[in-house]
Amino acid sequence: MIVVGAGLAGLTAAQRLGRHGLRVTVLEARSRVGGRTWSVPFGEVVFDYGGQWIGPSQRRMHALVHAMGLKTAPTYDQGKKILELQGRLSRYGGTIPRLAPWKLIRLQLTINRIERMRKQVPRDQPWCAPHAARWDAMTLQSFLEKSARSADVIALINAAVRVIFGADAGELSLLHFLAYVSSSGGLMTLIETRGGHQESRIVGGAQQIASKLAEACADLHLDRPVEAILQDDQGVQVHTPQSAHRADRVIVAIPPPLAGRIDYGPSLTTLRSQLFQRVSMGQTIKCLAYYDKPFWRDQGLSGESVCTRGPVSVVYDNTSTCGQACLLAFVVAAPARGWAERPETARKQLVLETFARYFGEAAFAPTAYHEVDWATERWTGGAPIANFPPGTLSV
Image (cartoon, rainbow, N blue to C red):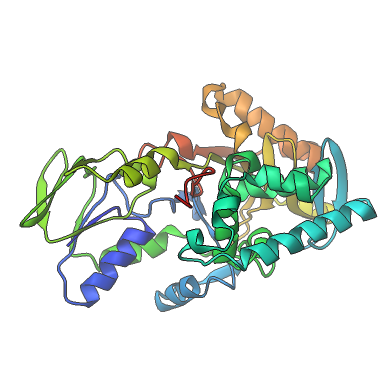
């Protein structure tokens, strides 16, 4: 058996196949394992440049973390949060920001409607939902315009959507959105820190999971990008620039847009080929600014902020468990496009200006600053997930 990709999906597949006595070869294009998990040392501390959070509803991941002997630490969320809604700044406590009463009602009604709809979507077969064709013909944006009827409410929901999907509501199939929300246990689970998917981080970095899974792979090859997969009566032959590997079967565990770049023989079906062409990766830049101390906490602020206009969409207190202060910002979706073409100093200045607007002038003096534009990562092409436009899932 051959597995293409040494991210969490590929390594988990290899581990499970190995437990059943199968010999598995794993081929990875990068010089590291982990895919969209990537943990990098900063001094004596490790920070995640890729996926980092884990929530209580992600039971299988928690079980894996526990089995590996890894520990988690809660995301700091003490104090007031900040909302920049259409250019207006406000502070609030809890999960729901301050809005006019009628807007809060529209927001809650829209969330309630999303919850009712997503429960009709089977997690593994969203195309079997009762209204699959109709929902797949709509964008999330068109649904929000009909349901929310408030520019502020739509902007607030889209700010969350941008971070979750790396795309704007107008780019997403409503069915795709509902399927993802359903598989995650609800929209608020995806959004919230305490009790949600941002509740905890893995001490020492999330890439440890992939590294520990890789230890069980007896036949793992790095720097082996797969160029072709050829099938014949004897099985499959998988070609990399350096070598060819033969097996009975192959699992392709890489993002769909990357899978579409592989040459297949015989050719893929038309539907599969079109799927690879239409699905796109989200646009996400992860920005980390390091400081001598978490000065925002002295102001009674949690560090968590939401902005509806950009370029920064959300901010979190990303201070390490040993006290290395850090603010984390995401530039996602439309504001992320073309980000890499701007001068490095201009990009940094835009992010620090956002921090200073929320937390004061001290934000202009980080001890270090790093960013990762996942769209420029050759063997990923974007983050956090692959997205389906209208008319793709229900075909």
